[in-house]
Length: 85
Image (cartoon, rainbow, N blue to C red):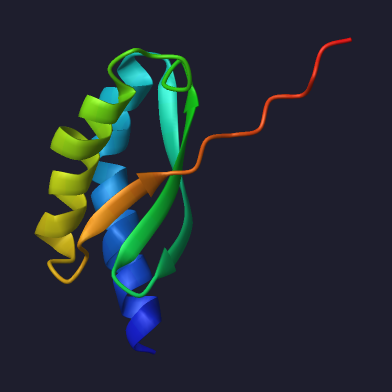
């Protein structure tokens, strides 16, 4: 039950930051919450953006911690790109 509450609050935080990512052609999806760590996946133009780590720390992580102060870290799980060839 407690984990569902955290997931709902994290989803609320992601919903707050999503419009800013969408404006730049990107998006974010929640992958999992494990203890005090939130795993997300940046998608769209956020995948190859040179400042995505800054966005993750100063934007996403800060917003998630506002809604769920018990979270200590937000991690971007990099999508595996298929091999060409």
